[in-house]
Image 1: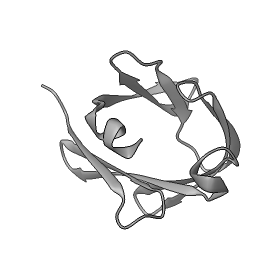
Image 2 (image 1 turned 135 degrees about the vertical axis):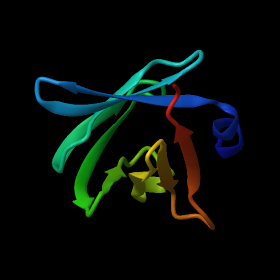
Image 3 (image 1 turned 90 degrees about the vertical axis):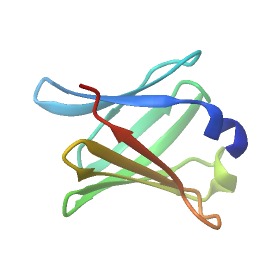
Image 4 (image 1 turned 120 degrees about the horizontal axis):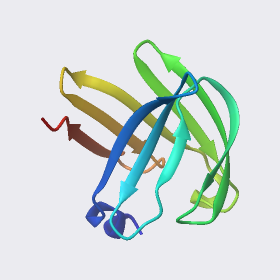
Length: 111
């Protein structure tokens, strides 16, 4: 699954809706995934995998850290996603499944 995921080119779009920060992740051929970027505990449905997660999220300085858990994913072990601005025009997102190294994606703002 990981090698397939590395070939799917996603792109995030951040918006404020009703005073809340949202991230919509879009991918060619997939369903758009919408997540709230706010601290606390929430439930999240990933439509492309038809999986429900319990998410615990915090801000660690300027990094948003979301720990997701679903018995149906990663043998029930949590996955950790970190998002931060790594420059004026760069967003870095890491997804850590507990393996040798996390999956990292770096996005540059289009002009």
